[in-house]
Image (cartoon, rainbow, N blue to C red; front, side):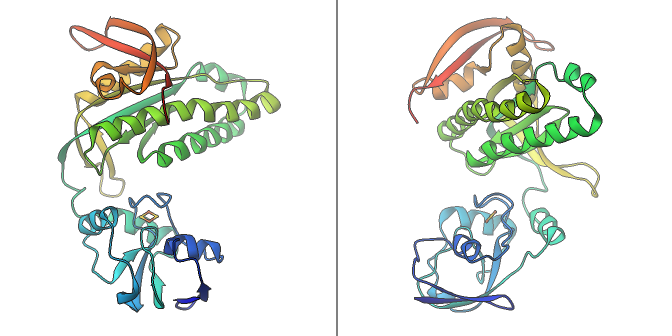
Length: 304
Ligand code: FES
């Protein structure tokens, strides 16, 4: 048994030290903030080590990357990445939503622009305008939130970043923190597949309660973007801009034209072609773009 003291909260006796500190605290009923779901992206799980720093495993790569980005001192650790090997005393640093906003916002590098290659995913609900005309405002907002919750979980579970919502559309990025094109693209296409599965859960609810069902189209492109925080300082948002973003959006628009669920660009396909089965191949012009673009309909993953 190892004693883990959450100061001002609880003293825990734990024998399974294979778990992260976050898993241990949640298991013992502590409302430990973890906005990114434990993926070393938000730092809201941060704790300050008051005693027993030597009883922690060293930072892994993910933790070191985020700690460097946010300028965290050595005695501040990410609970979602940290494992203990002996008694330790600590204190949670993010206690409410306002703390979380500050923790997420206080990034050193993301406030200035940087070029980065990412997989950009756009999704959209087909016929949502007609749906919204048939239902009450309360129901529209409720359904959208339920839908975005399901889709957002999938994005986060696949190491993605939820960039924004555009009406009933969603934009997500894969590879914001780590430049590994193959795995970034793999995560993006896996998320797209799982979003289609998650949609079935939403549709079960919709069928039962509204006698409706949604269909979605997803477009994905891999390319260079500029990442940074943009907007009024009271409402600045970390996002991606650039031609690659527009292209991903246009590809999503093409899914309606050929009644396809998932379409990817040639560049995206080059990174995943050994891992997917494709259906239609489409050579087309895209709105606002010159020349022809080759797009691939992805039907399924060949392996998990
Ligand atoms: S939960 Fe987000 S960094 Fe730990």
